[in-house]
Image (spheres, rainbow, N blue to C red):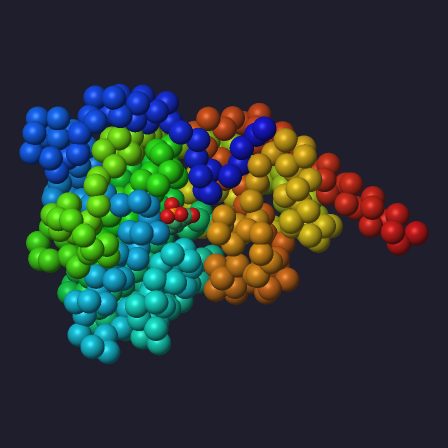
Length: 380
Ligand code: PLP
């Protein structure tokens, strides 16, 4: 099977597997236990925390281990709701992942505003700058890279605008981490990430918070993580997360891969009349293609037929797949529901080759030809 669904989840990186197995054997203790077995686990966790902080460019004490980016995002909005003045707003881009949008709705129902995006899917910094002059919300959220389209967001510029305005800034870096350098993300007040998106284990996430000041925990219970997240830490998971990220940062070299993706896109548009690339002229993650397919077949059937041909692809975000509501990301970009309904997402990984992209193109052409033949036969 050729796997083109890395934005949904990525295979375990060998370095993460080794780190997890070693940690599970070598650090059986609870990091909160005062005996030496516990303290060894605590020291290993502290070392992993420091490595992650170094990669992001922040203080080790800024890092909180979580179960994934969904928990991290919920924790950020929960904290903001607990600490913000009554009636305060939160602003978030219209193309955020559902875990950010729904957390904003849950904690700030009616007091959340969407930062508009251009047709290319990029958040409107002008809007943000002008609105921040009129008043400051309790939080601004802008993701680093979009999961459906791969479009990169101007998070550094948004963070700088927010810093000037004294507004806390949250960056969902789930799709960025492991694909582009993590350095600099630590300047954001809050950052979320999920290990399984970059070759770490599932159920393990990270949250960067400001070390100073109190963080209102989402989970109540023990005093772990400096009182910012209750529950026994997943030591092996944290060590595997860091091992995966460090390995991905070391192996990062997108030059050729970007070229293969570009070749695929050019041929797709040229050889399948009616196909179009979302965000074609915009800076995007090197691994992601969001393509509007010819109307030859419904997109769920494309996925099934490609699966049979040996290719795992997606209709968009994993959460939205399986139900046919138009993508909120594409509709925010101005696409009609009908066009949004033609979108397929192909997301490669570090091991995807030029031959894999070429094979995917051939399979798409074959599925399109089959659909065309069936449509002709039905008409005749
Ligand atoms: N943010 C983005 C951009 C994502 O793509 C995802 C997962 O698809 C998440 C957050 C949520 O991650 P998880 O499901 O691992 O909690």
